[in-house]
Length: 178
Image (tube, rainbow, N blue to C red; front, side, top):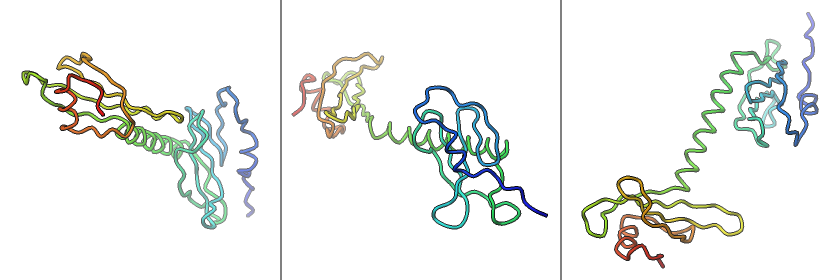
């Protein structure tokens, strides 16, 4: 019994056009699946003699997920992609992206609640970092109980927002800290 060789991942890589604004067509091959805004590609694992699969979201340059891939029955070639495996990979890669976005948001957005200057209400003080490559900065914002903006000032991106720094800003009539 002879195994039919699978198309190489190099051939699959050649069929993609970088920088193309067109949506890739649906494609279901043993080592390359494009569907539902995602591309799954089985590649040679550089770390060992096995195989890996990479999941790339349409429009992205880097894979959202790279993981080991199962060997086929001959213990030499990779197991072909199928609908079930692709759907599982899409779900896993989507979760990885969602967690990454949550982590990035947590790094760039901070929030504390402090008493108003008269002590009768509570204010939400937020710090949103704008990671501009040339001139990064942060916006310090005061919001009342209804979410209405009371004040906003630009501060250094390394400004440390804490209950104490927020309370001091409120007590100083929202003048720019520092």
